[in-house]
Length: 218
Image 1 (cartoon, rainbow, N blue to C red):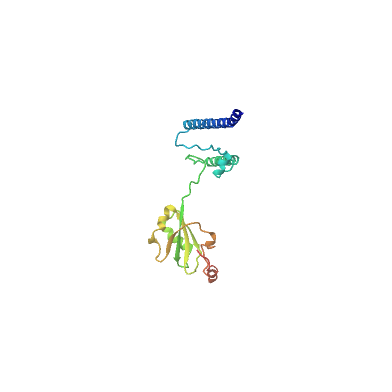
Image 2: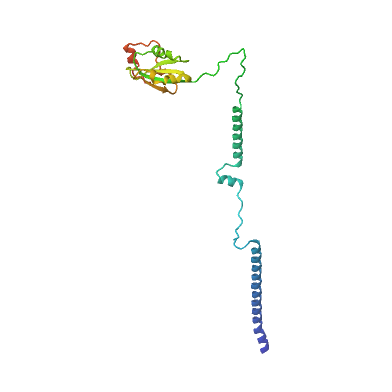
């Protein structure tokens, strides 16, 4: 009876020892697996390089959004428009332009007109006329001369616009030909019609005409 009790008391102890042994075997098995995993990982990834989780590559639409571009369909359309406009520019630039070279022809051509330059002539006597200025410049034998009197702010002096060919402009730039006290400067731009007196040949000298245009500027 005593032996049975001893065997019954030993049975739980044996079971406990078996569980402890199983736990030890499982722990050693897990350590062995972890060691093998670490060994394989070191072979795949060298030391010093940390493993990072794989990132999903962005889509084309996301890349376009990052660089502030429109989706690829609209980008393609804009590219087509740009290419078509470039083609149009090439076509417009490739127009045919030639200059005649034959010296023997029944047709007569006008040739290229010479360039023109003008001066602003001022501080002359208020009685000076276009005819007088033209006669004054007549000895210079200018190839082209267009003289027009222009309106002035005050009627105490007269101003003129004198146009000649560029090749003759140096004559007008000579200070020795002009009377003392007048002012000569190069005129730039285009002379407007409202700056010119209506009659450049015979200017009226009555006071009413002078008072009517007294407020006009050059």
